Amino acid sequence: MIDAARIYKYQALGNDMLIVDPAQFGLALTPERVRLLCDRHFGIGADGICYGPLPDEPGPNAMRFLNPDGSEAEKSGNGLRIFARYLWDAGYVASRSYSITIQNQPIYAEVLDEAAHTIALAMGQVSFSRIEEEMEVAGETVRITAVSVGNPHCVLFDDRLDAIHHIGPILENAPPFPNRTNVQIVHLVDEHTIEIAIWERGAGYTLASGTSASASAGAAIRTGRCTSPVEVRMAGGSATVAVDENWNVVLTGTVTAVFHGKLAPDMIKKLERSA
Image (tube, rainbow, N blue to C red; front, side):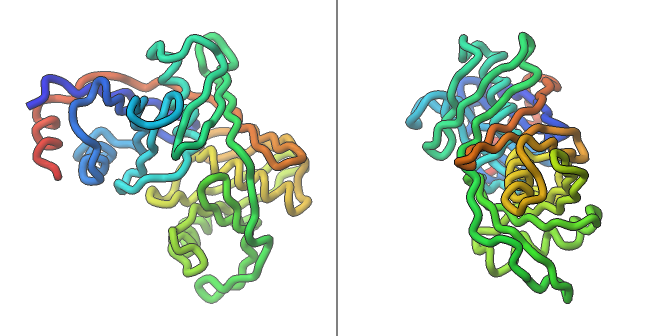
């Protein structure tokens, strides 16, 4: 049995993540082990795992983001912000501005205060493949905007935010999205403010999501409903999304440390028995 497996936990607007640093964790992260660690009854409980820094992968401060169902996501805005905070806390970075690599893509982070409570991320470009196209969902005609922020999103403008629990899982697995998609219902508050409800691919209903905030704000600007910057209000709190004329996105939001510690021997044994 490995001697110790240290885990760190952070939350960003209620979106809670585990940090698994391979320098302090002696087991490979198989999908079964990810599911166990993220299980809120039999494990620690989390909306996902930030795995890194990974010295054997190209790029500085390389990481992978793993969904609670064991699948790997292309990008996670809250996960990247949490990982940026961990790099700062653990002493991996000395400057307030630094890059993180995910899926061979550099993401630039900037710590905005001494405690690294607020972090801005340059998320890359937002792009659109469908803009308010009509689609039949469960006998209802809806208008969807398909957005990419490095991962797929399906945005609907509707005042019925609670409908996310019904329409989210349907759209996540709808035929136009062969790799599944994240889903957001967006309510317009004013030119610079939206409220959103989120169904996250591989996780289900989620209190907050950085890429969902970025995709929703981008769609609101693209369809003429909003002007940058946009405050995005989510169940877990608010983030700010700025979009420039080239559709480059900067996401700014908070991160809070929750705990760190070693897994108990019983849990380590259970993980070792997992495939």
